[in-house]
Image 1 (cartoon, rainbow, N blue to C red):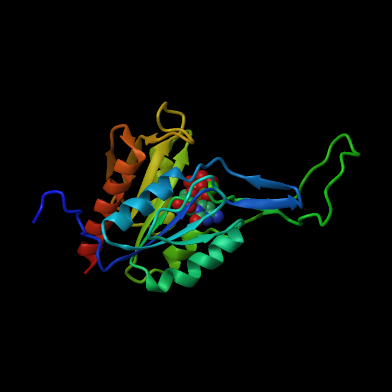
Image 2: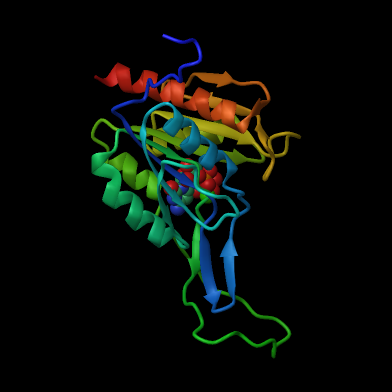
Length: 225
Ligand code: CTP
Ligand code: CA
């Protein structure tokens, strides 16, 4: 075989990736959202497709074009993302949840544009469902990979999320570090495992990090068989 032949090591596996922010409507012209370009999730989807996986990409609004060969579903709200993800979950082998899901949504979206006729206003927020935690409760052999962007106490928060959401791996990054922030093409991540081990990775291109995460997911999958 040619040395240039692509490595099809994910052939036969279905990988579901979530990406981007969610957008929670306040009124017809405004929404509440998170900072997320979608680049990390789209890079994972692209890397997985190149390695022969069947790829389902579920994304909130981004400026990116879905990679060729992926099954793409665009969503806006966390509730829509939750529904799309839960529907497909029983038929997938690996889930990579890089989406920046809004933790809260406005309790009510106003039917008409809110006018600026008061000096101050407040918006009541209610908690969104935690999609990843729900997958952790439902999982039956799927490999679950979460992401976390932190600005402080990275390792402590990451270990709590791995355990609390029943994850197989958490990719944590300190978004205050140069090269790890939002909208960049690079990331500085730590791989955090349920046994408490933490593997710090160097500054990497998002596509290289995507491949590294897929290597780990594949190893975890093989370990479960
Ligand atoms: N996540 C999710 N549904 C939510 C919130 C988060 O599926 N409603 C997922 C994200 O896609 C990510 C992981 O959970 O893979 C961690 O998200 P993060 O915001 O770091 O953690 P939270 O549990 O929301 O905790 P906090 O924001 O308080 O740090
Ligand atoms: Ca959150």
